[in-house]
Length: 365
Image (cartoon, rainbow, N blue to C red):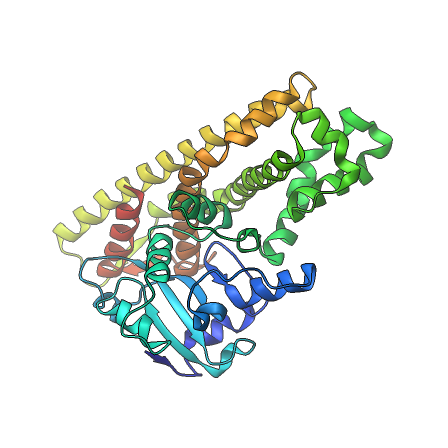
């Protein structure tokens, strides 16, 4: 499928040329370029087919005219975009949805083959199963499917790192104050936050590795897991206010146009399902992150640092559940605020609100 340069998707993606990985977009060209800048070499390719080396993989909310591309109902899909020029998305390119009829033949046609490479097909199917593309969830999915993937593809985007930085700094201040004293809290907190978020093993933080009783290999894994848990805490802090507002707005929104009694009853039932689903997912996330808080307290209060290390090394087991829950809630919150901007009238046609709430109810179940 050809995508014209004026396609709205390309206009919106124009700003992502240097983004890398977010929960919605994996920009392979940006990931490779950033890794080459930092390390002086390109990481091993993610896909077997070289034409996919500059692809964008996008978790895309299907538009009404796109829903018919699939044999079963779905509200979001994984979109593969191959830009005509990797450094200028505005020039357009080719795209397809993973799972649409004939998509493996379309994938093969990108590099002159009858069908897509088996490795590439399986990898895209694994990504399609996920509700989001956050790097911690993607890493665990690909490990579970036995894909050998370079660590460069699991790095947070610079935009997310910048937005997370102040949150992480606040989280770590108590630990640094106890370990180093109030006089050094500023500088030492900056160093620790940088080490965790960048993934760079700062030799000056060897005392932390020693305190955690981790060898050098496990220390890198531990920092990755710590970064993942802090990421999910940060995302929850970002999303929770919108979710709370949305639950209140569910009771205030007014229907416009035709409102048959059966539709009104359906809307009320869907509102209840959505509110219950959001609450259930939020409780699950809070419980998982509460375990992290308890384990971190053992490190911060110098009670049992090694227990925190053991918790970190087991953290990947909860990344899938955390990532799925956060992916669903982030999608719900972001689309709700897009459709119903703050301070705008809470009005919607009955059929549109039914569609929105029905989608939410299905992905929350």
